[in-house]
Structure formats: C-alpha cells, structure tokens
Length: 305
Image 1: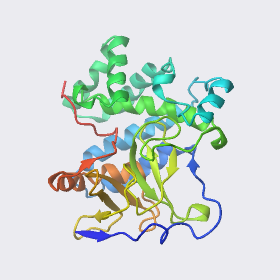
Image 2 (image 1 turned 180 degrees about the horizontal axis):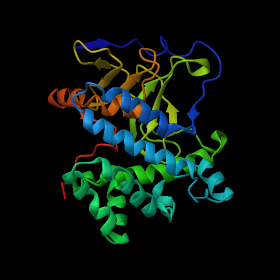
Image 3 (image 1 turned 90 degrees about the vertical axis):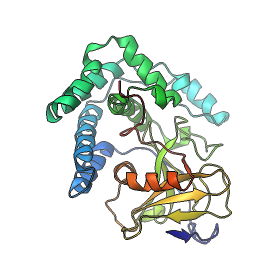
Image 4 (image 1 turned 45 degrees about the horizontal axis):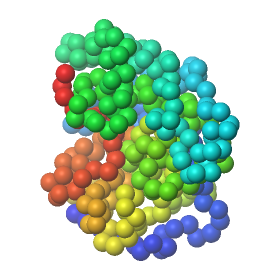
C-alpha cells in the first residue's frame, strides 16, 4: 500500500535554524535495547530481537567505560571540514586498538543466553587470531557483506559501533561540514541504517538519517530521495494493517528505498530497533524491485561460516 508524499517545502520546518547534525547521546545503545525488548513481545522475530537487545545493552556498558580512542589531530579535523570530508572515515583512521577486545567482550556477554548452536557460531570470535577479526571488520566497513561470516557480523559491527560512536561523541558539530552526498554520514562517510522523523523542539517534524557506524544523525529534507536527491514520484510503502510507525520511502529514479521511522506516530520508536523489527517490509520491497540503500548491522546477510 502506498501513500504519495507532499512536495518539498510543504513539510519542511516553517522557520528557525535547522539542527543539521545530531551527534549520538550518551545512552544511544540503551535506548535501542529498551525499544528492542518492547518490540520483541509477541513478535515473530522475538528471539532475535531479544538477542539484539542484549547485544545493545552490552554495547552500552562498553560505551560507558569510555574506550581509549582519541580524535584525529585538530589540523586533520580542520582539513576535513574545509574540503567537506567526513573526519572519522574508517579509511582515514587507524582502527581503534581496543576494538577486538570489545568484540570478544560483547561475544562473551551474549553467548550464555543463546542456544547451543548460537554459542558455537560465536566461538570463532573468541578463538580466531586478530588477523581474522581484522579481515571481518574490513569486509564490513567496505560493504562486502556477502563475504562476511554472517553469524559473527552483528558482534563485529557492534564493536566497531561502540568505538566510532565514542569518537563521534567527542566532536563538536561545528567541526563537521555539511555532506556533499545526502546518503552518506558527514561524520564517518558510512551509509544510514534508516531515517527518523523526530518530535519536539527545533527538530520537530524533521527527517534525520541515522548512521550505521557512528550513530550520528544528519538532516535531509523530506519528500526527497535520500539516496539520489530525486523529488519526483517519491512514495511510501507500509504493511497493510500495520501501525505505520515504519514506512519505506521509495524512489523510481534509483529504484532504492530507505525506511522512515516515525516518532510522530510512536514517540518511543528507534531508528535501529524499529528498522530491524520490520524485516517483512524489506521482503515486500525486494519483491517490488527496490534495492535497500541502508544497512542494519544487527542483521547482515553473508556466509553462514
């Protein structure tokens, strides 16, 4: 079922300065965990949502410990801003030295609650050499997901998220330039997990894209494809009979879609949690011939081993 969108300008902020960049709050993973736990009730994917919730809670514990990861030099930050480059792009940073320890800690945190098969699937994270973890991280950061070990990918991604989110939290929005490409995070250059229509204050009614890696959010006007900037023929898809908290914004030009999570429909909706819990909508969009422009690292398709 589709609903046409209004034209650009009809639903943009009426006045005032728009907050272009939202850096991640201190409780980013805890908020996601609580929403996942809520969504897991009576959900067909309940067991997996509860696993993701436990992983998110473990991420929050690691973030609270403040990973020993420092920002690039001020000169580098200034250069990135001058040339509109994302200052925390993985290609331009050494990988945080403690990220492997974080990955192993997260694996140990969630393993006991898994069935025997799930525990065995995560065992490579604890037994393999550092080089293997580095290889998996490189594949994930490069978007080569079909070559990933699908069982460990969520934990690898969760560990990277902890360190990049910690880095992003140390920035000041003034240190980050506006993105040249609306579909890539201005902080780290990664793809979004989804977008969210926020409520309250200066952000009320505005659409932000949530980064899959550093958890930052950047403003992109509504009624426009977040992947290619097209404004014609944009439409929303949603599950018939559903509550319309999550809708898929489709573009006829690039044949892509990105989910929009509506806090104006449910104030507790979370860009990562609600995106994950709406897998059925992904299946329907795939059948309709649209490719997903975002990625959720809590559930990645790859090789089983």
